[in-house]
Image (spheres, helix red, strand yellow):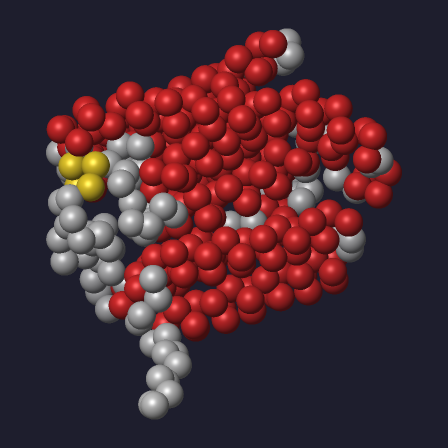
Length: 352
């Protein structure tokens, strides 16, 4: 991952124009088309009605994740077959994502018990981790311990993506920069399969974005957020496996900090952490006068900065630089969380 300086503009144009852009555009168009076809069915069978913990005010169909995940996996599969790339590892991840999408679809219509959801999530993540063959820890740490840690982290990542998908455009604002960054790593000899899936998922999210912009006419639902969490977690695992652990942490750092701090606070208050709530920082922001568009804009802008820091960790891979950039990322996210936690300042009107 240290060859970034040797990449020339001409070397980037070919893969970008003939592989990544067609994948992204195809996934965006297919996602939007599937949404148009599925929306009447979702309105009838998957209507999310507002409650005390919701961020929306009127009944809104959910299940847009069917189109997003379906388009992403379909376009990525076609692209890899066309390029004659090995499909074994991708098929494992795709099947695990489809399994989580099915769990999410059932849960969207008739909520499943928390322990059933958790066991199914553990199974899906375990299959992905144990078949990946990726190691990120030193060799002296037993592989079984590393895999247990990665499974635990993967299950948490899948759930935090689900927890954070509670506001119009926030998942697009978070995941589009992450997937675009990972797709562009194609030019740094990054494994092609996760790069293509990243471009495809980015495109599918962009195709979903017009339907989810504030005020949203469609939600992802658990059918989308759970498999998206698994797919992005798999991409970040590949990134960490190349030695770019700092970059893999920086890219999703806003979601990691918001969800983890909220979980620890709820545990400290002895709340039932598996129940719906309005304790996340992005939810507090809307209570403090921030519009959904403003919150998502903050998240998107922050993620562009975090992606810049992640790129810097690839250019300067020395330990002190990695630590300094991680600390800077934590500080920047902390500032946004602090801003969300306080009422938004409203300019005083000048009397005439």
